[in-house]
Length: 217
Image (tube, rainbow, N blue to C red; front, side, top):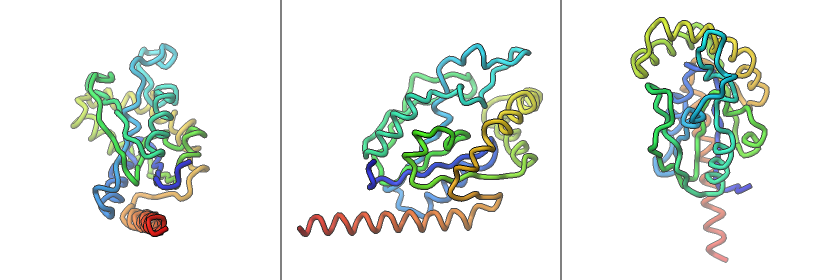
């Protein structure tokens, strides 16, 4: 494992504020040193038939909805200090687009997603593992506003999806990830983001010192 790249995993239910928390952490860092990778980009191109509910609705909150092989490959590349071409997911069309986004290379990678702590191989790559534990009412309200405003969903469809798949999948697959977290963050994320930024700065400082010592040899 390349110890020179600092990889942070940020997990939590839909609407828990993972992206917001990651951006707060990044504000405390040099913008050229850190980057953000979204797990949402790695939904499989075609959802397996078994992930549809009895009413014919897709279940995007199941682990099998993600392209784990590509995700492991890309996180390993980032950990090794290389750039990747991350896929771009079209939420309005519920499909992976033909576009891609170049991510990295970077000293610090923040990887956020509902299952960022789920896979053993990925957990082994992470330097720090975080879990955002936020009350279900708050997560539901945030998801409702986001999906209607940003993803073109109807109010009724968001509510139905929450009770059909989001809520039961959180209880079955997402919440158990807390056991793997180095620390849990509540609704108030400012202090946690500041502490995590400081820890990452320590890493960056020690890495630079090692580099300077190597150059002096």
